[in-house]
Length: 212
Image (cartoon, rainbow, N blue to C red; front, side, top):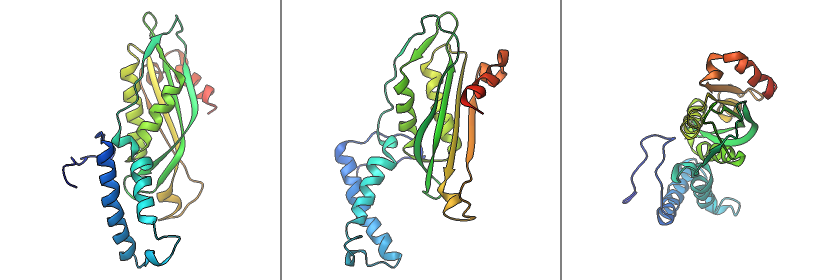
């Protein structure tokens, strides 16, 4: 594409202008139409698929890879008011896309952290949802998504005593192709601080709160 820097990693970030996004959509429309033709479809002959190339291009840019094209959400940390226990938000829904087969990854994220004892900070509850949305809207592997969310939170929550990100998801590349096993799911976790060392039974408390 003319004058557009290309991403070197599928789950990376390069902010695009509105004009650049529209250019991407226009070019993708042409190429996806060629893809359908190569797959043996006269897509223009069917009113149900006549505009499919542009629909697909718009959904890819505006939804499926939106996180790659935008700045991460701004997250402000606030004093924890002396709170030193576990903060947990569980069952955050997400939809992502496998970078190997471009099939859907759908599941839920559990996020927990422990503020510092003397200078602890907390963040607004919805900010964790926004962070999940930002990093999930891109092609990637589930392991990478887990690490990206964890790393961002670990930086924002200065002097925290632990951050935990646990993801449970079903993969279209398993259910719709290959072995075609529906109902299978994958779990990943990235733990640090007390959650990793299991200080004073913190890890057990976390999984008990999640219900595992």
